[in-house]
Length: 81
Figure 1 (cartoon, rainbow, N blue to C red):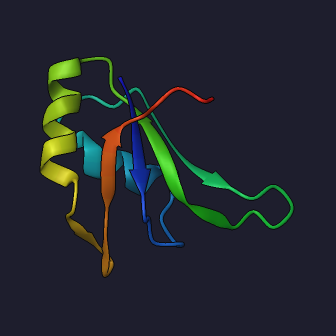
Figure 2: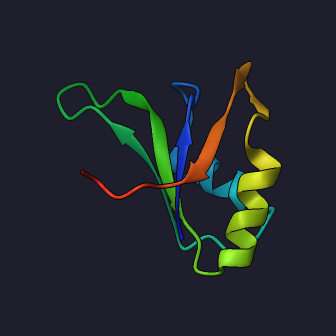
């Protein structure tokens, strides 16, 4: 399952994003989306977890939780339109 994670602090790395989701299951991939010219975070990212039960548990546990003073927005990613 692909999971959208929004309202990330600007300083969060791919590894830090992976680490918070690893507490709820096995993370296949985690990436913070960055602007190409500046390399600065856009404040959101995606996490891929192969086990849907673990992914749903992570979404429920992490949505709205505080990360460096910012409440995370976590939900199943929607397909690009």
